[in-house]
Each structure stands twice: as C-alpha cells, then as structure tokens.
Length: 411
Image 1 (spheres, rainbow, N blue to C red):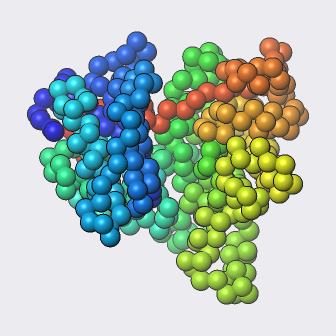
Image 2: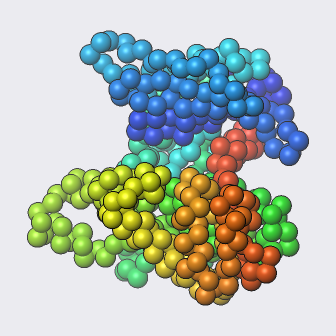
Image 3: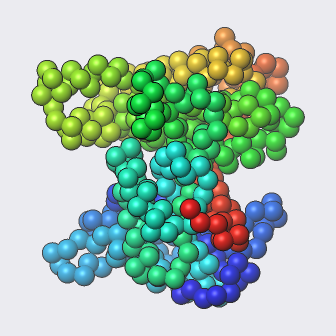
C-alpha cells in the first residue's frame, strides 16, 4: 500500500486507538480552501473484542460502503486490534488517491517530560512511551498497541506520535509543580496537562473568531467524556486543570476529577481496596456515571427526570464554575470563554448554566444564540465574550505528521 512518492502523491492516515474502538481519518497532501490539508474521509471501527464493525463517511458526509464486519480468525477468538487495523488498511487501499499512504499519525496521550512535540516513532521512542503507560492506563497502552500492529503490517510505513501533553510543556514551573520534595519532582512527578491537541487547534483558530482579542485572556473548556479546561494568554497554555494523570481537575464521564489524596489512602487502609480496584473505581466507575448511577452520557442525563441525573449535572457545572474561577485568577482576569468537544459543542444546558455561574466575571449569555448553537453565545455588550468552537484534533495530527515526515524528524 505504500510507495516512495512521498507527500506529493500520498495521504496521511490519522488514528486514535482506544480499548474497543479505533477512530480514523485520511488527509490528502493538497491544501484546501482554508490552507490546511483536506480530509478525504473519516470513520470508526467500534466493538473491537466483540463484533467489530467499520463505518465511514466521505469528505462530503456521504456514507461509504455501509458497514464492514471485522471477521474473527477463529470462532473462539473475538476480533482484536490487529484484525481491525488489517481490515482498515485493506479498506483504505481502494479509496485513497494513488492507493498510497505516506504516513500514519497517532494520538498518544502521554509524552512525559521528554516528548514536547510530535516525533517519528522508532523502537527507542516506543520503549520510552511504554514506560509512561502507568500515567495514562486507559489510553497509552492502546495508543501504542496500534503503532506496533501497523509496524508489523506495514514495516516500511513511517509513523508519527503526537502528544496530548505537549501543548502544556512550556508552562511556568509554578503551573507544573506539586508541593512535594524535589527528589519526587526530579523523578517526573509534576503536572503535565492533557487534551493538548484540542487546545492547540482552538488556539490556532481563535484569531478568526476573536480578532485582536485572540491573544488576550482566554479559557477554553474541553467538555466531553474526558473533560478539562485550559487558560490561554497569547494563545499559549498558562494553566490547565489536569495534572500528573488524566484523572485530575474536572469531574468527567467516568473519572472523578479533583480528589483529596487522603481519600485514596482511606480506600486502601479502611475499605481494603487494592491498587487495581482503586484504579477501576476512579477511572471507570466515578464521574457522571458514579454520581448518577444512570449513565456517563450527558445526553441521557439531560433527558432523565431522575433526581440522581440532575445531581450529576449540578456537580459537573459546579466543578466547571470553580475551575473557571481559578483559571481566571491565573490569568489575572478573563476576556473570553470558549466551549468545545462533545458536551461543550452540543449541550446548550451546560453552556447556559456555566455562563450564568460566570456572570460575576462579566459573562452575559445570549439565550437565543446559545439555544441555536451559534458560534458566539454572549451578548454584544458582554464584557467577557463566550463562544462555541468545534475542535479538530484530527487536523492537528495530520499537520504534525506532514511536518515531521517532510523534515525527517525523529525522536
């Protein structure tokens, strides 16, 4: 499927591999009207480990070939990542220009202290990223598994790792430090921050929305199943809510967010939970799901009349409001608030309640604009403007991969 033609004739395949799904997209080497690589198609393979299916859409949103089942190699063996990726590359072969893939870009959650920008994957890079898996146990192992599978399927195909932590790497030390002994900090225990690819994209498009105010004091709320917030000044990360791991900060779909470390000690000493049980509790059984005991999906909670659902939404909004105040303090004020990601882009209720709680900061919501999911949802006279800007992590991955492969950069 690969050849030596390079960027002029090839496509970049973008992958975001999870435990049971692989999201993918393909970008052409030509620039579109906006001056960025054109997305040729996108889709997802879901149900990996059970009965996986591939669904995809073209650049114009039309469905491509319906669904393709990932067949198990043996009846007793459910389809895994290797089979799913093999299906994907076979499927892509007939649908990309020239049937040529120039490279593959991977979203990798944790880059640690060393990887502060995208890099071409080598065996040495992969070994270093493996060592970071305990810091992102729900994501990193699956991100790296996809890299290994593709290396086996297409040994000559260049792969690029792009990191969710990289955007925050140049924060001042006070925004990164914990009040722990220096020997602990020297061992790599610090605040890294995540969702960096999303924040990097938003920072890049702010001028087209905010004009000269794009470089002012902006807080971006990336609200999805994973949720965090980031304070930007001059479109650079000043502070963010996630820390050493992706558990910190906001309450999320199934993750707890801010937690007194004494709770973890209590769970171990008094409730006799082991490390694996605590990890599962904090990562998979908490957040919106844990509080509501109904669902981790905001859409299901907003549609429910159950008071537990309302309680979960109340707590979610409270967490956002508190973190917004802290980030505004880090910036010395606030000029704009941006909502993005699944909940941020689609929940008018959450946006309304967050904006109402931020009235003291100068946010004045335009209720009709918010209900219509307009781009600007604050009134013309609002001292702090409020916006809804869809994120595009896929595009950031494609752009990073093209730049890395064009210059031959490695780790």
